[in-house]
Length: 306
Image (cartoon, rainbow, N blue to C red):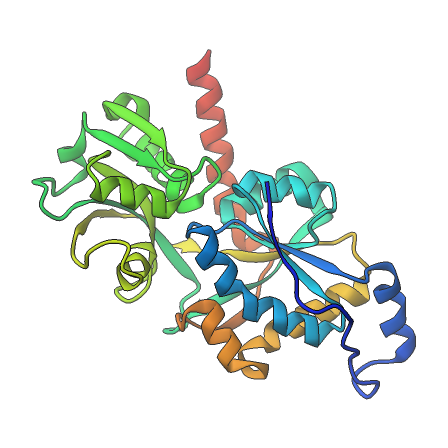
């Protein structure tokens, strides 16, 4: 289920000038290693490589080895947090809503990234092939369509909510064929290859998003897709943590995370692909709209199943 990445065999102790040895010793004895969960829309090799600077920085800053765990999907990481095999995670707003539903206040957001323009959000988009005749949602009615993952915010929750509330329909009713591709890259690859006529994915701005990243990596040709629908803004993915962890650990992780862009600018740039200017603190209240959307979608699924 998971791919593991380890950094360092021994702990690197934080300077005694930074914090008291007593506090430093307490939580590190209980947690001699920390695990961070990810479930990226990109392929496994690229996801692991991109997270290496993140794990290396935190290993040094916190004074214990940090292990990156990549789940097969968002739900796998949430389940790993519930069983305390993962302590910290970044898996999307809808997956955070799922975690909160399952674990309640035992999980909470710590911080969220800003893009290079200082924005706190991104978008769900529906894309078609550039050479297709489709220009609007009305044009793809009755066509084949792919979501990314059932716990993806931009790849499922938001477009499903829009179909239900704005068009008074569902994906199953609106499209001739509906499937989950398994991830954002898989959706766009299937679109370009002709498996589907439209797909949902994520987009931040003209320079950043799933499609732009895939173009820059040579996975698809530049200009091979076209966006025909863009959602309202979605709050960025939160970094969430188990609140059952020692408070000193939580506080030190939060401080290290917020300092990442300035303490290790090269590592931060590699981790974010240069698309983020830093972090700001986040709270549960920032994600109330996403929680409401996921609850609405769940109620709709129950209603249509009966």
